[in-house]
Structures are given as C-alpha cells and as structure tokens.
Image 1 (cartoon, rainbow, N blue to C red):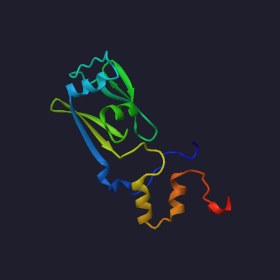
Image 2 (cartoon, helix red, strand yellow):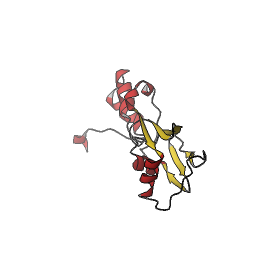
Image 3 (cartoon, one colour):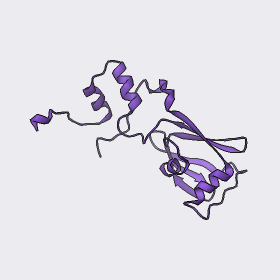
Image 4 (cartoon, one colour):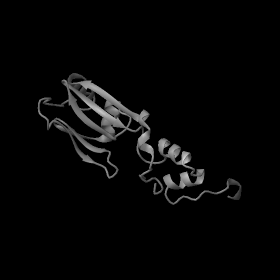
Length: 143
C-alpha cells in the first residue's frame, strides 16, 4: 500500500525493552533449518557459511546465508523466533547469537515512535500523518 512506508522517528533509541537476543547451538540452528531445507549443509567453522548478505534500505536483513542456502530475513525471523528482521548475527562460545532490535515488521506505526512523539507534544493527527504517508483523516460522519 502506498501509505505504508518506512519512516524514521526521533526518540525511539531510548526504548530498550524492544531489544532481545536469541542464542542457539549449532545443532539447534541445523534442526530448525532442516524443517524447510532437508539438504542444508553448514560448516560452522567457516565464517562465510553464516553471513548476512544484504540489508533493506531501512537496515533490516534482506538476505542471509546459512551454508548452501540463502534465505530472506523474514524467513530467518520466522524460523528462529526473532522479534524483527532488524538483527545481527554473532558467533560466541560455539553458539550463534541473534541480537535483535525492535519488535515487528518495520512498516506502519512504531509503538515506541508514536509514544515518543506523544511525549514530545505531537497530536494524534500529527502522529498518524508521520507514520502513514499521504493519508487524510476525516470525520466518519462526513463520509
């Protein structure tokens, strides 16, 4: 929909409750991927076998590589139970850690952004117009 655009909102960085981590062993990664990719092969010692390949214009993961498969960020989000596609991948102590920012799909109204705008004095109409591009708010009785 044309009104659903990615927009930046000042003040969201202070909301740390939407940061999360998911840490999985190599075996857990493999098990979860095998549900969709029976032929998955990953060399966990090769740093190139688990790697983010591409980001969207809003900085979210568009494509990530797991061994012999490239999958979308949204698919990775679903497979590994991540709150968002805004994540980084780290290797730590023989495990894979997903460090996730946010909670949601990244399009439409950000709850933290709307809260921040409201606390800064923005009206409901200003908030709606910030998050939904080129919409018009009307009284339902005038339609």
